[in-house]
Image 1 (spheres, rainbow, N blue to C red):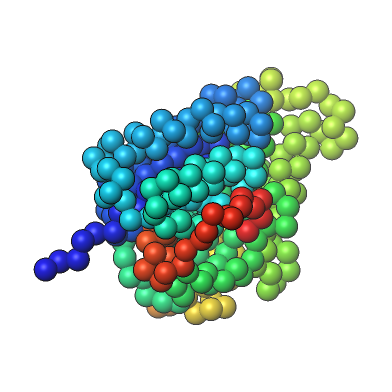
Image 2 (cartoon, rainbow, N blue to C red):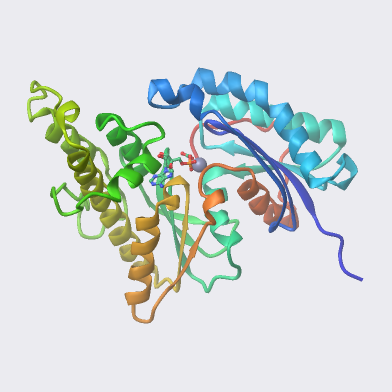
Length: 345
Ligand code: KG4
Ligand code: ZN
């Protein structure tokens, strides 16, 4: 007789998406609900924590209810409640953590605490399975840019991370400079499609020959100076630029960021002799990043395999939380009702 599947109800509120999902055995997506707050933050050009927190309070219950209804499950079908409790905006995380603890207590189900970044990493496993190990994982999001040595879902080892801005944050800030709509990443990518990536030579910060850390604040400043002059006293040239000029800046900026991401991933892959490369996080939705990493993997000797998170699970979602929680469930790694949100992780 086949084992009964393990159904996990998962919750994600680390930033500006209120998400809930039901996933069976870490892979079979029974439902995925994402209530996006993009419209609320649009006019500020970035996420406002207080607004995010209030929106989570409003949307968390409907999101959970909808996830249960879409999956066509009742509380007795749920084996555990999982929640991303770190890293993220504490006043946003606390809403998801409180909801998960309440359900765990009321329904008498085990509670599983999930690291949001490790969940992004796990999302790369949703497209395929069983990567040849060791693998190097690049996680690129709005808040983080990290390289991991991945031997198992439960113990990824951090190899390097950003010392200032995250890659997604740089996309968002440069979009603001170029007066492109929020969120910046997809709009920079769209503008870049018509641009010449060799038009402007923006700096590529490699931080020394062996470093696996990242720095993206320099390139953001370089774009700002390009548009406002070195002393920042010149008029903002963006208003008088043609669509082609904006497209060239977007393409040149995007190429520089991706160049650094790919070279550092290659460096990390060589260091740990990786057979596989994993890619996840919001910026992983970027087609050029996906294509350039694929090229890097194909050109390696021997070639490396690339596992990329499916597009709908690149940006924040609860499916990745349930997917990782399945491994913790099997390992018996449960949290208790003293669980707290944590900004770092
Ligand atoms: O993982 P995510 O949803 O949230 C965090 O955990 O931060 O990532 C959001 C980030 C934003 O900075 C957004 O601009 C970026 O991912 N992003 C992209 C693309 N789609 C989303 N960046 C570049 N190209 C894209 N197509
Ligand atoms: Zn994220």
